[in-house]
Image (cartoon, rainbow, N blue to C red; front, side, top):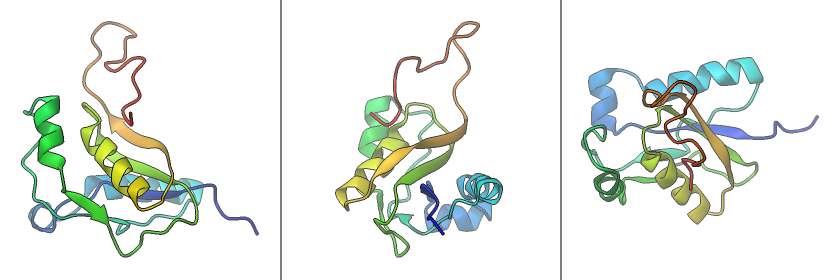
Length: 136
């Protein structure tokens, strides 16, 4: 039997924020996707060390600074298959880029990003980050 082509990791919440909220929305999205596809889910392959402030009100540069040293690989991290990163909302891609950087720094390979929300369209049919890969 062949292995699934990739494995999923949700963007983690800091333990205090997850305790407050009671769940990680990115993990719930990833779990649903995995139920449909059969791809394996590794919710503890990344962990958030830093309790970052909400990023939605920050500039892209401030987001990047806020995320420095916020994530690290966790106990479920492995290099067996490529990763798909799952997030709920992608605004500038700062969090996804940081997750990708951390995974690749440990020898992992990131295929892409799954998300269910982005900022509103600027004009009919225009994606807010058209021609821009949020992982670059």
